[in-house]
Each structure stands twice: as C-alpha cells, then as structure tokens.
Length: 394
Image 1 (cartoon, one colour):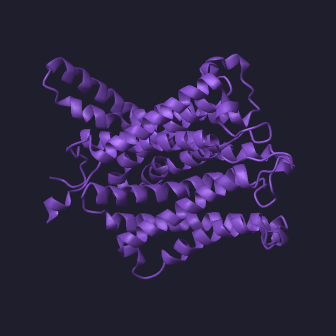
Image 2 (tube, helix red, strand yellow; image 1 turned 30 degrees about the horizontal axis):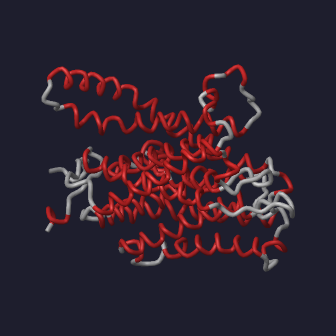
Image 3 (cartoon, helix red, strand yellow; image 1 turned 60 degrees about the vertical axis):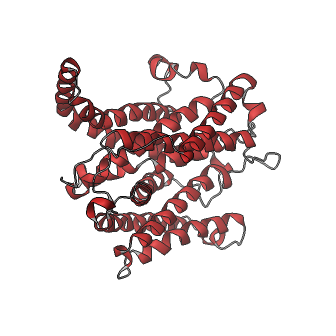
C-alpha cells in the first residue's frame, strides 16, 4: 500500500485516557453553563482593567497560532509548490479545524452577551469597518467553515464506498463538485489567516501607552503574522512526532527534517524583525533593564535561538527527538510572546490586577481535552494520517 495515502487508524476509541479527556470536557461544560447563568464577574477574574483574560490570551490568541499548521503547510505546498509535504497537510488541517473551532467557541463564552454573537456576521449594515476586532471575528468565523470544507474530502472518502448505492452516489457527486471548488477554498484558506492573525497584533496597538514599549510597536501585525507561521511549523512537527509515538507509527523523520529548515528560516526572520524593531525604536535600555519585562523578552528570544542555532548543527535534524524538542521550544517561545503582548506587557494602571480564576483554568483545560479527544476519534475513523505502522515496517 502507498505509504503517502492517508487511511483510518482503526482500533478502540473509548480507553481510560479517553474517558479522562471526556470527563475534563464534561466538567468544563458544567462550568460554562454556570458562567452563562452567573455571568463573567462571578466565574472569571476579569475586570474593567483586564477585559481580555485566559480565554482570549490562550484559547484564541495563542490557540489560533498553534492551529496555524494548516495555514503554514498550505503556504509551503500550494504557494511555494512543495508537494513533498502533502502527507502532512490533512493532520495539519484537522488540528487547525479543531483549534479554530475551539477558539470560536471561546470567544462565544467570553463576550458579555453570547446569545447575540450570531448578529456579528448577519448585521452587515451595522459593521464598523474601522474595527480590527470585527475583522478578527469575521475572518475566524469564515476560516472555521473553510477548514472543515478543506477537510471534507477525508469524510467523503470513507462514505464514498458506502453499502447504500444512493448514499454512495450523493457522496461521489459532492466530492466531484468539491474538487472543482478546492482551489478557491485553498486560496481563502491562505487569505483569511493572513488577515486575522495580523489583526490580532493590530488590536493591541489600540492599547496605546498601556502596552509596554518592548511589545508596543507598529510592527505588531507583521510580528504576529510571521510568528503564527513559525508556531504552525512547530505544531505540525509536534503533532507528527506525538502521533507516531502514541499511534505506533513510523515517524516522518526525513520530511520533518526538511520542514525544520523552513521553520529555521521563518524563526530567524522573526528574530531579525524583533531585534531590528527594538533597536530602531531605541529600546535597548528597556531590553537590559533587568525587570520582569526584559526577562520575558529574553526568555522569548533565548527559546527561539536554541533551535535556531541547533537546526543548522550537523546531525540535529536527523534525530526525531531533536526535531521534537526544537518544535516544543519554538511553540513555547511563540506562546510566551503572545501572552506577553496580551497580558504581561499590558498594564491598565496600578489599581488593576489579573490572574486566571480556577473556573477559567478548568474550562481551558476541558476545551483542550475535547480537542485531543476529537482528534483521536477522527484519525481512528477517517483517512487522515499517511504512512505505515511500525508493525507493517518491521
């Protein structure tokens, strides 16, 4: 069998770890129900000074960047015509679809009146076209739909050979029409993240002097865009490494080694933009101030420099454990950068403070658990992952 053709893994789904994931998600749903009844004030630590909390900083701002694997791979495969990475595209799109769906859901539970959020895409005559937040909302909503459409061929492949002739015929016709539309869908899949990831940076420019100078730069939109591509490559590598370990499959070491070169180029581009901006804006004194902010800045940069140097070291890119470790550092650095921009580097005044309340933390944990559980369910029942199991290659 062709190792580059995706196929369903099969096997038992409801295991002990799976029950734990479902249990965490059930607890999160109970807390979300409480939030809907009691309101944000009773269930979160957010306040007028910190209107953005964990659900935005992690679930949306960081979560969508981690879910940019599909976007990052689409740039390589469809824009730069690197078809050799095609076996990685479906799991990347699945991760993106789940991540962005969770982000959209997190926005819904974070807004003050979630029962009115449906008006955002519908009430076009009331749109404020000068609003960065409107662009983020519309693009994320549209991108969730685009991602699931991009993933639809995996579901249609399973049902195309259904025992019921009528179902098989309907699925076949749908798949043929979808094939003709896919170039346009892929184009939207590249355009929409480019717009809203940069706009996530634009939003924090609105904070003005409340955002620390180490992050308050006109280049925030560019940094957020390049950073999300970098985190996307890291997320794809982590997903592939963990998938090969947990599902007992042969790791795609050679392909991930080549992908790490693209990640290294993007990494150094991000570092160059970041340092050049700080120097041009004369922030060298703040960089070495020895306070919390300068410490967080150098933590970001050092976490990036370690894999940035190691990726060019002989032999590092041939070992799957090194590729995994480098990807973890890349993702961690990108996550810290976004947390710094939205929470650590944001100071609304001396009278305000924020630390996520326990319900906020448990809801976030439960949503992540749901994402993992959904991923396991889908890859076991639908053709997502390519390659052979270790037993087949033994």
